[in-house]
Image (tube, rainbow, N blue to C red; front, side, top):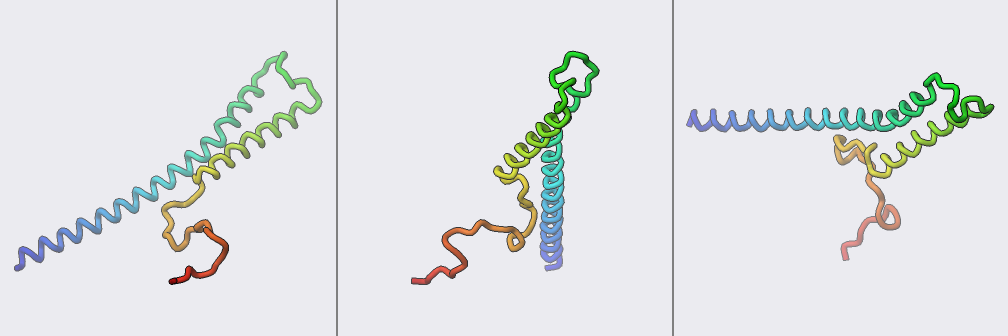
Length: 117
């Protein structure tokens, strides 16, 4: 009897430990996903800045009056496009949140309750 109770308690402790480890792993995955989003947005911008930051005399748009502003607009466009693509693929959704706090897309026409008939 005592041995069976100890085994049962050990199984419960193992289950709690496994649940905690899964929760910790999910949180770490969410952090890694956030870092991947930030990196994927800023990597192309770093490339553009690196190319235009070189000290060459014969670069396009270097002596142009609006070259600085065009490069800033290009970087803003690239960052916006990258963020839009990631948003459309659902990367900004917090999948570690509980189901009650997630925003679920509304299907159908509105807030009416489904009929039971």
